[in-house]
Image 1 (cartoon, rainbow, N blue to C red):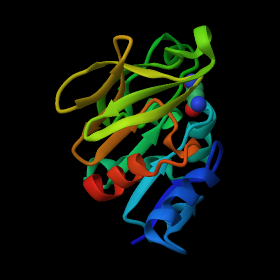
Image 2 (spheres, rainbow, N blue to C red; image 1 turned 180 degrees about the vertical axis):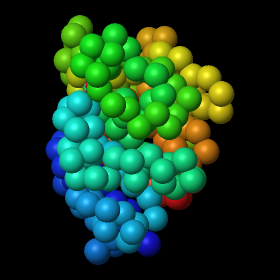
Image 3 (cartoon, rainbow, N blue to C red; image 1 turned 135 degrees about the horizontal axis):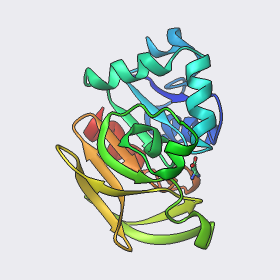
Length: 192
Ligand code: GLN
């Protein structure tokens, strides 16, 4: 089985490494075009700058394809900027910048919930069944509201920082920046 990582901007290599540590050599795919999507069983959208990732995905002609796959039940995990892109509802900043979201998850997000106050920090949280995980937040967004089928997996300071909805999974933090593989393993084993 192969898992892909959208490889247009952001922290791609750390995710590729985490996948290979779990599934073995040649199990990760840096996704840059539509053909890359055909070889994988699950996709990670990494952290970075969500407007840039959105625009580059449109340029690479994978934006609509990823949306279609997500609607059809294909497993997608969004970390940080990826969490923003998965959301159905953005915030003022999303509106102002006319940022295009994939609109797959029943969530409303705040693009820089933790960004201004604290730029980056770490905190230990239970992420559903994954207990005591060190969560690294970097200019992090958060989910401010879920509706429909989305389930909250973890909260911090009244914000939802991990959520799941059928084939979709999102975290506001960056598990790829720790040596702990349990959140990636959760995505691969429980969602993919
Ligand atoms: N807040 C950033 C954005 O709006 C995301 C930050 C991150 O991915 N580390 O794109």
